Image (cartoon, rainbow over all chains, first blue to last red; front, side, top):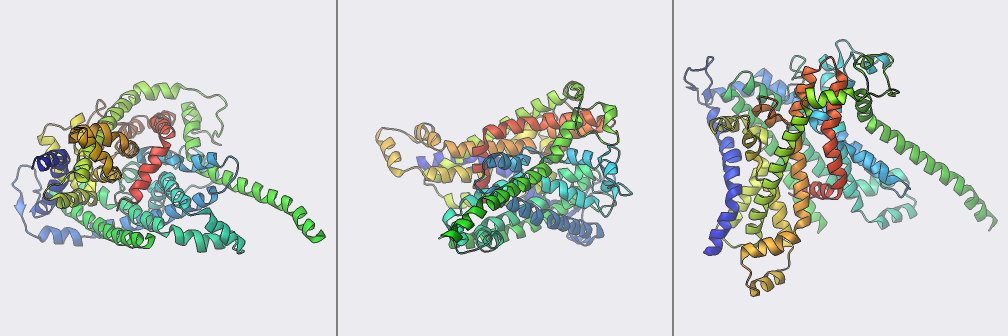
Amino acid sequence: MREAGLAYALVLPSLVVFGAFIFYPFVRNFYLGFFRTPPFPGLPKKGVGLTQYREVLTSHDFLNSVKVTVLFAVYTVPTGIAAGLGLAVLAHQKLRGIGIYRTIFSSTVATSVAVASVIFGTLLNPNVGLLPWLGLQTNPSILQNPSWALLAVAITTIWQNLGLSFILMSSGLQAIPDELLEAAQIDGAGAWSRFRNVIVPLLSPTIFFAVVVGSIFAFQSFGQIELLTQGGPTKHTNVLTYFIYTTLQQQQDDGKAAVLAIALFGITLLLTLVQMRLLERRVFYAR
Amino acid sequence: MRGEAGVTEGRPVRRRFAIVARYALLTVLAAIVLFPVYMAVVGSLLKTEQITSRPPTMLPTHPTWDSYSTAWSAGHLATYLRNSAIVAVIITCGQVVTAILAGYAFAFLEFPFRRTLFVVFIATLMVPFEVTIITNLNTIVSLHWYNTYAGLTVPFLATGFGAFLLRQAFLGIPRDLQDAAALDGYGHLRFMTRVAVPLARPAIAALAVFGFLSAWNQYLWPLLITKNDQLRTVQIGLRQLRATSIEQVNVTLAGVVLAALPLVVLLVVFQKQLVRGLTAGAVKG
């Protein structure tokens, strides 16, 4: 009994934080979604049942936002992982000074979203000189250009996450016994064949993990959008998190923002379930 | 014999070529990865009027540090960095302490609803923070924590990930040690502080580095609940600096370098812990 009392005392601090700042606000979203925020502050909120859910989730803005968010994940996740994997394989060889290259390839972990976004915002700034000098200028400029803005934000994101992706793939590679690769080499497998038939299959758990968690991160990306495009031009980069943010901050519309937040959760949950299935299979596989 | 000798004679040349080619490829890729940072550093060392010059200045032949001092004082970088350090240290300490306590309970103590509570802890990992901001903002305002360190830190003082990581580390401690400590008259608190925590140091270090990194890099929450330079963290400070020095890209870039530098130092020192933290994340399922 005393042991139980001590145990509850030990988990209590965490539970208080989780209850107040994760579970309560999460559950309250469903409640908030039932109420329409009045057009003028001070008027009472109006309960509208599920109407607001239906309106928001079928609205053109929402569907566009989901499309942009998915597109952003599609641009960033596979490319980011492929780049990290490629660099990890290249840096996984016994060469003098390879440590320096490893450090360089993992260096972008030291950048935050804000640091990366401000750097790329400057590189893509049409007045600063690099792009016009290279003749790589679009009209309107890249970040204001409907065809290029999302791609530019995606490239910024891939670069910022490259270090992370590299570290993850490298540690996965280090777990592969050298003998396996040497055996394949003795059997006459070329570099590409070793990559395709030995490294990729053995690394598949790590790659699956990176795909699923990377997609979850991609769905939560916010800072790069806020700093580079503010959802524009004409909502071409209006990802879900930015949509929630503007609904909350500019329109002060709690009800609508809550419905959007639930939608974000639903998508993330779907991805997490996929992740758990894959991890389960992986544990089984490893044993 | 002769034929074999011919092969080995040809090999060194081809091998050397292969090695040179590898270095060349690695170097080109390294240059691409570093290019944005290089341009930022070069830009920060230029005078304002050089920034827009064409062709662009790729090599600062007369570097000037003026933009750094401007960013540091007029650009409030000193304040922003201090705020970020305070916030990140508070969050890191909080996460480490709550994770040790909860992780210890889950690893060493028997109590009703242990499994259920553990599932609750893991469930927190499935709720993205972005989903909770609407009510959290209200909560922070009604607690009068808007634009305070409390508002910036309290929501992040515990994580399901931390508790999970330390539970795993504690479970790795041999049962014999616990029995021996019990014979010596150690209670749970003494066993936790004298034996369990020292033995779990690698996991704690990994959690601390990981927690510090995520706290330092936060963007959405500090953007929502800070309103002036006294409280802004460095990430939001960069946004502010860019807005106020729109004609002085060199000052903004100096701010970027100053904002990134502490993490570069931290990661060089704690590289091993970071990798462990990140890969622990990879198998946290």
